[in-house]
Length: 315
Image (cartoon, rainbow, N blue to C red; front, side, top):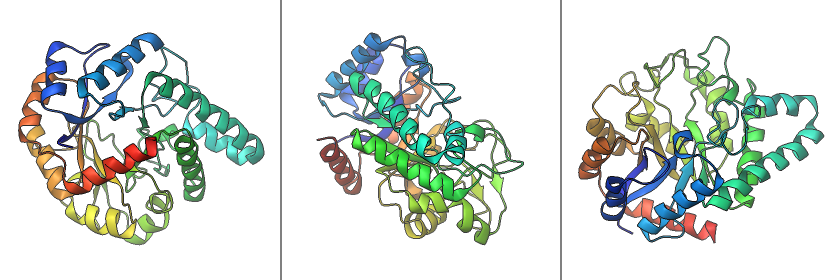
C-alpha cells in the first residue's frame, strides 16, 4: 500500500483535472470533504464514487467533518445545525433515558446519509472539555464542562458510529478546551498544571478508544514550552502515546492553520517527525497540494497496518 502520508481537501463539487491527476499518480492516504464540496445527495455520491474510482479502491478513506451544530457540512442535504454536541450534553443531564434513544436515532440517521454516499470516516467526537473563560472555538462543539459526561457521551458516539461501520476521529488530542484563542488564527498557549490537565482535559482521551485521533495546535507549556502538540515529540510520545495510551493513527489538524508558525512544508515535516502518522491539508489549493506531495513520504509500516485494520473493520 504505497500511499502518501497526507489527507487532502478538494476545491469544489467535482474533481478538477489537476486533482484527478494528483489522486491517481501521487496517491494521498485519503480525502476530506467540507460544505464547499456538497450541493445535494446525488452530486455528493457521484463525487465520492469518482474519488474512489481514481484511487481504484472501494474502501478508500473519505472523511467528513460533520459534528453537528456550528460544524455541519451536510446542511445542503439536511440541516443539522441545531444538533450540537452541547445540545446532546444538556439533554443527557436532563433526561438520560430519552437522550440515549434520541441520540441513537440522530447518529443512525447521519450514518445512513454518509454511508449512502460512500463516506467512511466522520471526524467526531470532539472530546475537548468546555472550560470557563475559554475561546468559543470549541464552545458548543463540546458535550460538557464535566469531563465524565464528555467521556461517557464520547464513548457512546464512537460505539454508535462503529456499529454503523463508520470510523471516528477523536479530537483535539490531548485537549483544546482551555485555549483562549482560535488556533485557526492564533497560537493558544495553555499554562495549566499537569495535575489539572490529567484530571480533566486528558481524561476523555484516555477513556475513549478510537481508530483515529486528531491533534491540537496548542502549546502545553508545562510539558513543552516551544512546540504545539502537533509538532511536539514530548506531547506525542509521553502524553498521547504513553499516558493516554492512544494506539491508532494520529492525524495532524490542518497544517495551514495560523497556530503553526512555519511554512506548509516545514509544518508537515515537523508533524511527521514529532510522531503524527498522517498530515491534514484542507483548503484545496492545488499548488500547495502539489508541493506537499513532493516532500511528504509514503506511509510507514505502522500506518499500513492500521490502514489494513480499518479496511477489515469496514468489512
